[in-house]
Length: 86
View 1 (cartoon, rainbow, N blue to C red):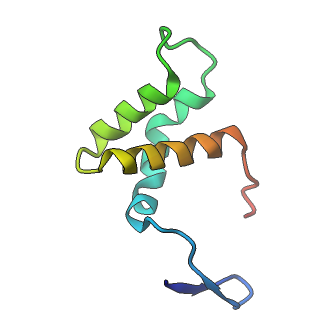
View 2 (view 1 turned 90 degrees about the vertical axis):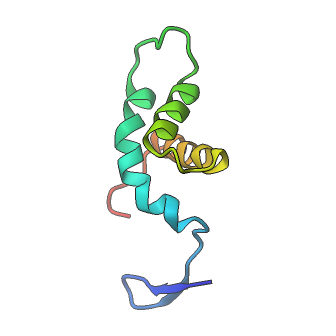
C-alpha cells in the first residue's frame, strides 16, 4: 500500500484501491453530474442506468465493475455534498 503526507505533514496510508478511476473521476463527474442534480424526468429511465451508459461510452476500456464503482462514487458525492474545504 502506498502512503502520502497530509496537510500537517503526517504520513497517511493511501486507502484508495483504484487509482485509474481516481484519475478520470473529475471528467466522469462532469459528464453525469446533471443526472443527479436535474429535477426533470428522464423519460422514466433510471438515472443510474443513464449515468452508467454515458460513462461506459466515454471510457469503453473500463470493465463493467469499474464503471459501476465510478458511477456509485459520483452518485454518493452528489447525494451528500461535502464541504469544499476538505
